[in-house]
Image 1 (spheres, rainbow, N blue to C red):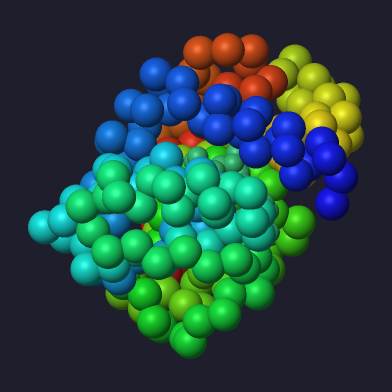
Image 2 (image 1 turned 60 degrees about the horizontal axis):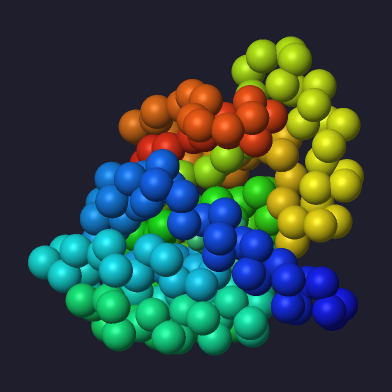
Length: 205
Ligand SMILES: C[S@@+](CC[C@H](N)C(=O)[O-])C[C@H]1O[C@@H](n2cnc3c(N)ncnc32)[C@H](O)[C@@H]1O
């Protein structure tokens, strides 16, 4: 681990993830999670305050970054639901099959190394009737922003904690056995190569 990824990246991530637009997305989607919830890439715990205590029994948040998990631990007190944090990667979840009622992922599928493996792992640990709630940025539909996404991703990935700009998030979910039931997509505030956002829910298909 370099000084950049251990010290600077966690601060950059936290700052980037606190915009007013992202806050509104958290308010809109996090309360959709229910039962025993797995949060993938919990980061600094910015979703924890938004879980609905009338629907959620427990949240288990995983992330590979010890620095971000330490920040999340400081936010557990803001949550109105029981929270457990674990250091783990989405590609190798240390949980039994069908052990969660739902999963939540916000702005983390861009950063996992093996997206199809991660999608398959979530499918494995969420119950067959369970739901995945997601808010992710990814591949834009227009050729201009797509070109920039392809050009910038190699550098962006190196400075931004592994974040890829050009991932077809919804395509990966569908290929991994998730039926996307509810989808909103579009450009949000900011450069078009960064701001194309997919928000929605999926169930095991
Ligand atoms: C942009 S941050 C988003 C954090 C948080 N989900 C949020 O919305 O504030 C991306 C997160 O993905 C995490 N991450 C990177 N690789 C991962 C992996 N293989 N499995 C799970 N999380 C990963 C990072 O450590 C980081 O916390």
